[in-house]
Length: 200
Image (cartoon, rainbow, N blue to C red; front, top):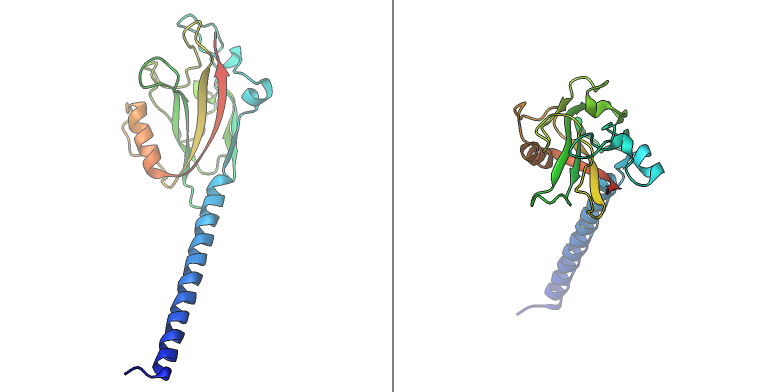
């Protein structure tokens, strides 16, 4: 037989458990929101691309029927998440008629002290100490600018910076862009992207 005291004690215990669970849920939600906010605050800008709207001849490839200057654009990033030990940058065209897009630039092992890349760094000029250039779909290392098929609608070129939890990627020097990309995604803390358009 359960007494009124027993009912009261059970109610008190149940209430305590409810409030404890509610508090824990609230703390978890706040922690998740804080983490999401930290990732969302990581930003990338590309002054050359943004101020001129579309990608200009300075950054376009100089072959395959294109006659640009093939200079990698300047990139600036800010608010990297805590724990960032290095950065990486990629440029990718998902609209290329290959079935797998086209990797235009892969650069990794950029020191955590860096907050951007100057124009031309992807061409081997003044690259941050210790950084590495990866293979692109042109079959070479370094920046290769846009050069979509003539008559195509403008392609989207995604320039992305990765904040990484490792100092260096453990990949061979001749690693494909896909292999580097796999390791980037496995070690990323946050990413930020800007997109430029180019057609001819």
